[in-house]
Image 1 (spheres, helix red, strand yellow):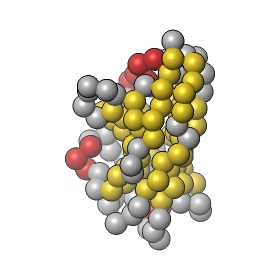
Image 2 (spheres, one colour):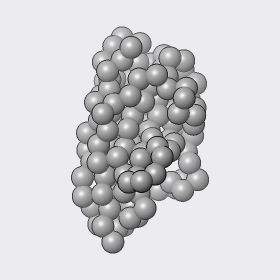
Image 3 (cartoon, rainbow, N blue to C red):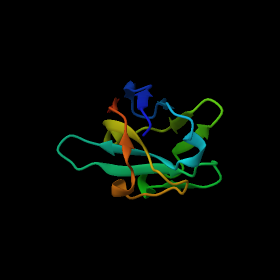
Length: 124
C-alpha cells in the first residue's frame, strides 16, 4: 500500500494554468502505474491521465489532450499534472491514484490506492 497526498489545487480564471502534485510514500513507487482522476459536482469520477511506472508511456482522456501533461519523478516519489488553458468544465476534485503494476491504465477499478483529492475551480 502507498499513501498519496495531492497538492496544488486552487481557483484560477479560464485560460490559466495550475500544477498539481502527488507525493507518495513507500519504496516501490517506480514499479507502479499512476493516474489522475477527477470528479465534478453531480458527476461520476472520470479518468484524466495516467503514466507508466518508468514514465515511458502516458495516457490522456480526449478532453485534456494538448492541454494537460502528466509526469513523474521517481527519485522524489512524486507525480505531477501540469494543466494549461484551463476551462470551466475542468472544475472538479482531482485525485491521484496508484496501481500495483507498472502499466498505465484509464480504468478506475484497476487502481488500489487513492489520495484525498484537491479542488480545482476554473472561473469563466
